[in-house]
Length: 352
Ligand code: FAD
Image 1 (tube, rainbow, N blue to C red):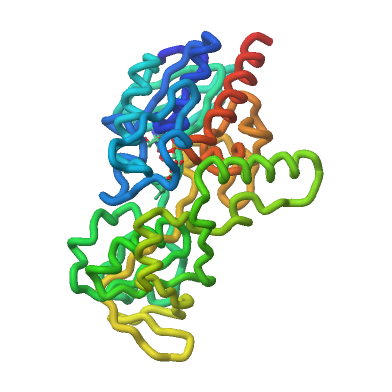
Image 2: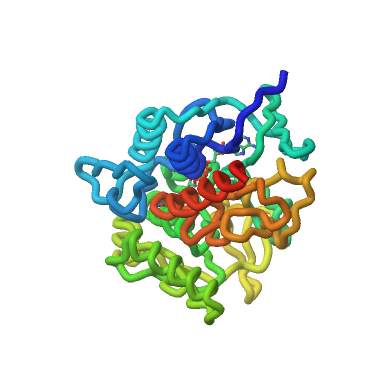
């Protein structure tokens, strides 16, 4: 049986909830379909020691300030999960859990959303599926020959299982720096980055990141030069554990190796470093496979958008994937504004 509603939001992490908040405020009937069986999106699955790079007050969704976590300036992932669970309850957001969306189809003037739990017909769809379900590992020569353990950020949980092992951590972003810091005192760590690590100033918080992303968007929209956004400030937020490890000299970084052998990595000068495990902290791609059948235009894995609206179909919005769907929209503080804009655009589409 096909169910009908005005808007289907695909994904019930922070982006899906922010969309629900604004749709609800505008009185638009909607449903939020989420593959997880519990609230919290990707925050449920991060490694144990992960802390936000911003204090609680700069990590809030629209309408409800994140409460501070007692004893922590930077809340941990568990605190974020609790906040998101409370948020969806507080605003009575219509989340249906354990629903995996396979595909979105055009169906006359409507869109048909096909899932493993049935079909929905809607007049608009918001994609808010994040990137966590699409980990990315670059094609490095010898990767398949390496007989040690290989894992991506999404599989890393805690340093305990790597105690005393020779571990190579690859990646100069926040995940790489935080996981390297986590492992530095228990494993024989080698941290590998494509370019020397670029730390943001120690006192930078989420507000500054949001402002930098917004200034970039405004400059681009006004036809001015690219300010560089957050990337112009650096790649790594020096959260307290990263700062301590860095200041203790535990985080030297080496340039990228050229290949893997069955037991080691090989450096550019031909020397080898034997390794038991490689942790790939090499990023993510947007989880957009369910839109494939619509053949929406785009480049490099992104679908072309104006703001959050897809260029090819004004009924489809994308939210939360990165700056290309709104300044800092892949952060807690940044997703509120594009969510509001998407809901407003959909409201005028539905009333037209
Ligand atoms: P998700 O949280 O991934 O939610 C998407 C939801 O959609 C998930 O529940 C998923 O299961 C579901 N889904 C996916 N595909 C389907 C489908 N086909 N059908 C149905 N459901 C589906 N941001 C900050 O603001 N502060 C930080 O300190 C911070 N630290 C970060 C640290 C790491 C390691 C990472 C990776 C990100 C961090 N971020 C941070 C960025 C961002 O806030 C998170 O990535 C956040 O989880 C993104 O929220 P989302 O709602 O877009 O995606």
